[in-house]
Image 1 (cartoon, rainbow, N blue to C red):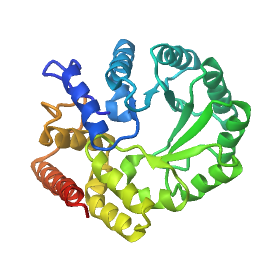
Image 2: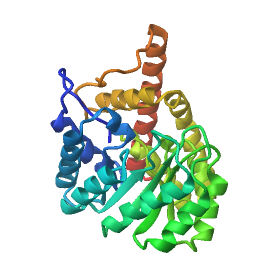
Image 3: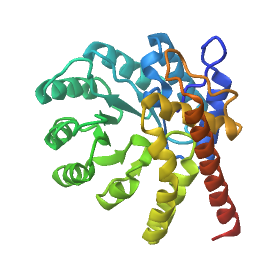
Length: 298
């Protein structure tokens, strides 16, 4: 989920609810917030709790709801995780605390504490956007010690080998999702990933890629992904840019009333704004093509 905000930068809950309905209608099999796409790093703790509650209540069991509860300490993460379980969340996504450098042993202890504090499934978000992230053995050891540790979301460079190793070494117990907007989706499918967690703007395109792949049309799935990649490559140059362009898409598609970002944020010059608009138009047209093909039964 992205974070819609009003002119005073307060949360636009109406647009947020619109987004939940939109993503489910366009093919999402689950929803998640407040994570990087929801600008969680700009939210107060009461706002994070509020978004969690709105997401769970408005989704109303139509699809599973995951709450992203990772924080800078074990205490705050456990507290938020227990709250998420108490309001009916179906699972948790927990990013590793990276405000200071910690070893695999310390991070394993952190995740064990979180997993043991709740009974619902836990997903480890391995968000190391420029590196290799946590070793595969950390995931496997957690799966052995904590029965509710069931998912890994990996957002690292060249994730395929790590994805396959996590699945193999865990005996298939752990399911792996790809992040980073799904840009490496073809790599993920080839290495056994079960899904992607993109932004809300083009869930329909991602769902169609999966449909094609599952039907045996691997070439068609890759072709559609490659057509979306210019948009993703541009977006992934900067986290704030990725969030901003997704919001612009949601405005274009009638879901958000504004693409406003919470400050401080990245400011784009006129040429970058032009590129952004061109790619939004290009990707929206691709989505419309996908819908037209679905309506025609092709």
